[in-house]
Length: 144
Figure 1: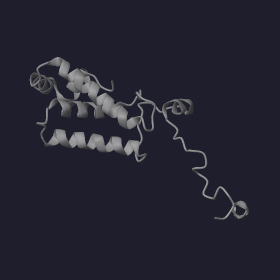
Figure 2 (figure 1 turned 90 degrees about the vertical axis):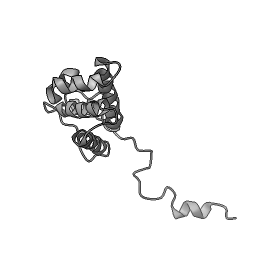
Figure 3 (figure 1 turned 180 degrees about the vertical axis):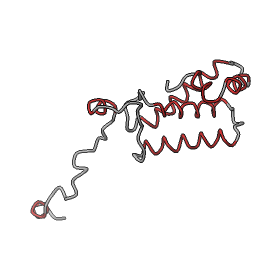
Figure 4 (figure 1 turned 180 degrees about the horizontal axis):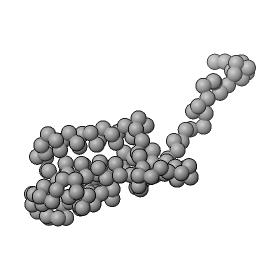
């Protein structure tokens, strides 16, 4: 997971987390479930470009906390919670589309970068702009 309940408490306070848990029938388990769901949601975006789970990014903790808190609100989030969730999803979409990158607490070595990024696979010939057959080949084909 990218965040823990302690991370949520650090960011939002014990009082708010307790209030959110009290809204759910499973209490404290609801926070764990929300964090697990947030992790899966984050991985669904990151897996386009990175090998998941991504380890060592403090910003992903922030993203996971914002998504988990939104999920705990049960469709009753206030403007700030909704805004943070929307910003988190927008950033994840930017990462998936190559417009943003995951940052790490300590810079990665070249070898670590190789191990964490997914290289896009292009079909054979996808980068070739010319035709496969020249005019001389077409001239030899039977005409209808």
